[in-house]
Amino acid sequence: MTTGWKVFFLVIGSYLLGSIPTAYLAGRGLRQIDVRRYGSGTVSGSMVYEHVARWAVVPVGLFDVAKAAVPTWLGLRWGLGPRGALLVGMAAIMGHNWPVFLRFTGGRGLACFLGVLLVLFPWGAAWMLGALAAGWLLGDSAPWALAGLATLPLLARSLDDLAIGAPAALMMLALTLVKRLEANRRPLPEPGNDRRRVIVRRLFLDRDIASHRDWLQRRPE
Image (cartoon, rainbow, N blue to C red; front, side, top):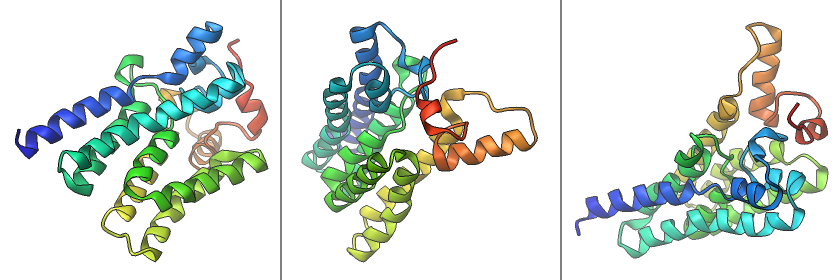
């Protein structure tokens, strides 16, 4: 099989694997709810933790890490090199964020980021875990996740990993900003100050309102 066909099959397979909505399935299976109608509206481990079952965030999170790590590793094993493997891993992230099985309404990709980084840039995975841990301890992970992603290219530069670490970090940051702003197609307010405030909050805080706790606790009306 030529390299081009290997890339094609791995990218398509990786996207489909990434599209498996683990958090959504946990919500349906354990509590018969659609996690997209709760809290932030994302298909994510955080919504499983808040609205489904706290213990379930462990298998959900591990699967989401693995569904990006495994195809990335396969890219290396199939001789695609680090850049080809990064492309495959990014396809899994795209699947997680915009899953074909849920009409392209998915998660934010943080667990999948960790999976790709574990294979291609392990220090980056440790860096992101540290940022997420700091956010969890301080009660608001979104700005810390953004800070971790924004400084990840600097870490890659300091470790002289500009070939893979830096482009991976920049692509992950770009996907995060796009996904936060798109917000699973949640409508923006009418043009004006309210819309500007919501856009800024989405980009920096990953929510539409000031209170983090109120945002996480939202339920269907």
